[in-house]
Amino acid sequence: MTDVLDLQDVTIRRGATTILEALSWRVQEGERWVVLGRNGAGKTTLLQVASGRMHPTTGSATLLGSRLGATDVFELRPRIGLASAALADRIPSGETVRDVVLTAAYGVTGRWREEYEGVDESRASDLLAAFGVSHLAERWFGTLSEGERKRVQIARSLMSDPELLLLDEPAAGLDLGGREELVGALAELARDRRSPALVLVTHHVEEIPPGFTHLLLLRAGRVHAAGPIDETLTAENLSGTFDVPLRLDKVDGRWAAHATGAVAG
Ligand SMILES: Nc1ncnc2c1ncn2[C@@H]1O[C@H](COP(=O)(O)OP(=O)(O)OP(=O)(O)O)[C@@H](O)[C@H]1O
Image 1 (cartoon, rainbow, N blue to C red):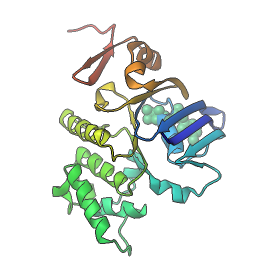
Image 2 (image 1 turned 180 degrees about the vertical axis):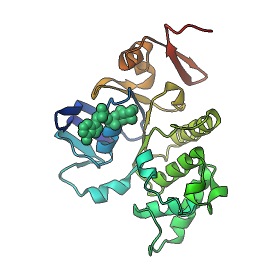
Image 3 (image 1 turned 90 degrees about the vertical axis):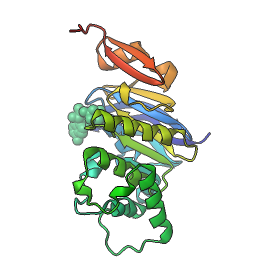
Image 4 (image 1 turned 60 degrees about the vertical axis):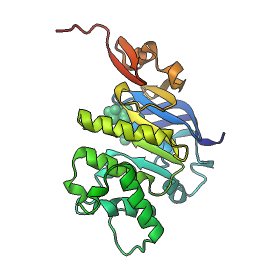
């Protein structure tokens, strides 16, 4: 299998702060990774490196076979999908949902002079349908609910047919029904062999969709544990990552965690 992402000894420093430290991580074609870690552990920073938006201070980052620093990131970026709250904030609220997805074919927001081809139009329609938001195609992005926005963002991040898709907390801010719909859509994406390699950053094991294969636990900018999810997602590893004694359960392919010291009632 081919490496989609290969980080070797990556350290990111900003002033006196070390955000990521000697981090090594490989993602291969077909893998579906979950990244978990406390607030401030470095998850978003890791996605910045993995998407070619941040260069390591030291160490090497090879994305889709091209080493950062020795490649044109503007050619690389369209091959890596990224959906994050920060990117969503840049989408003009007066843009139609169809155009939000369509413009991703050119890595821009705001429809302006681009000539779209029929093939792009039909791909955008297919993606809107796949994420259950076809009926919103002509609505302004700014008028959508949080759950609808998240699904449109993921559709957008798939528009350029990326080889790697990075999702930064896609379920944040969703109610229970919205979260479950999103988890279902991501489980379907994970199952589809045509899907790109996936990396999902989340805060909650309850949000891990069935079909995700690997787990990276990040603690204070370092890898606490990484590997196949069934071996790596243990109560001990999770407790060590979050510094809380946790009990972990798995029911019907889904995980749940709670503190062992919690008192009911
Ligand atoms: N430019 C910077 N200068 C100094 N510190 C920074 C800078 N950017 C990020 N940090 C710090 O690095 C740490 C990791 O940030 P990051 O956003 O990657 O964490 P995270 O795991 O995504 O957190 P959260 O779960 O809260 O979203 C945080 O403590 C943050 O304050």
